[in-house]
Image (cartoon, rainbow, N blue to C red; front, side):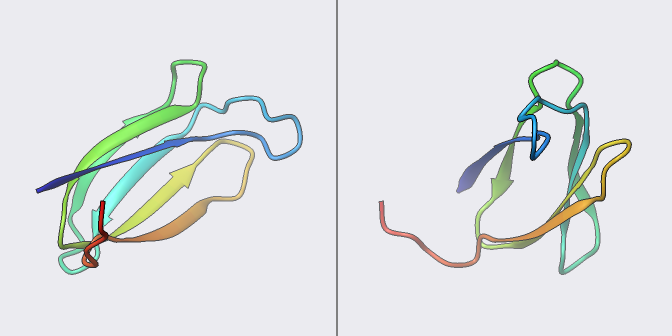
Length: 79
């Protein structure tokens, strides 16, 4: 099964969208499984990721500190 993961990169104060590099890595293997540049002026991104795995999400925007989050897709969530 696939899981749709979406997000939007915004400046915390102005809430303006940011051009960013978004990368997702499989934490078990270290392999980069998805990456995108949010150059669309909207700061939006989305990926389809395999369920049952644990991922690391990393976001970088020029002039900002990086953001990192764990995406644990190993747990089953009832619809």
